[in-house]
Image (cartoon, rainbow, N blue to C red; front, side):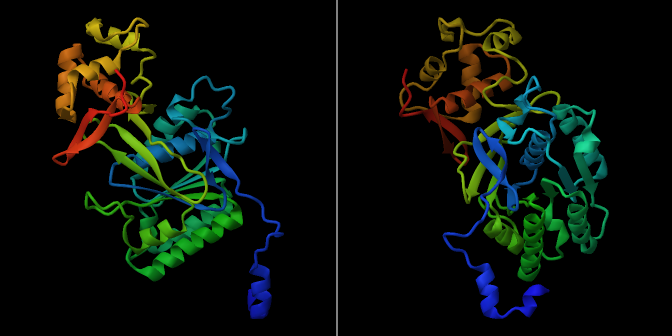
Length: 361
């Protein structure tokens, strides 16, 4: 190596940063609700419990990277406000070590393909399933794929499967160090997926590998799924640059595609939601503009200082407003939270709600 032939003083001089240093600023691949995110040359951590929506987040990233044109596409609702910065599609490498080849293929074809259009999907994405490869050989293939494909975005799901011992600090430092090196060398953003510890209250990333990934990542995104409502949420929990202040919440429609909370569950207006329920929604809680008056509805249901568990509140709302759909009742609760009418709380370890102190009725 060239640095081995330099003195310590010469090495330090090369590494010194001054106010006059000509260092290019970060180049971001996306904006999420107008906030820049996912920088070239950096690692991004995606974490959460098992089955919490991590693969959905990565599918959204890959779809936003590969769609032909934001300006020509009629709908980007499934991208949940995520938008590619440059007009030209990004080159994507997806390394899957966790799922079966069948699952990887199904997500590529039926989920990502449905969001971007299946015509040129094999040109936009380089997808490799390494589940059947020995763990000792996987990292070599990962690094080789990055060098050969030279992608703008790498989805590495999951990084745990390239180490023998997730608690070995030497392995962790070596693995993260190699990924940082190639991210910088090829100006790519590498998204590393790693589960949180299994205990419900423990949100830390697993093992020494998780500690090292958290320390070196440019951003961290946490995925969650509410088992009662089946609503997913994505939250940026750490960043070195721009804060994404609000959670991204979504459900999955009947086609298996993400749909933002507050949009519809496949419908386009509250009038159609009411029509879906057979026109039976209690008109007492419909305003003059034809929209549901959530402040009036939840003000009546939670009079005074009442609080209710999610299951109890859902049932009362269905009874009071003559709602027939569980999903629609959940949607009303979520939208009331987003509008500041309801305040989430915990009741005996479970999700609950009360009226917000700031709500106006």
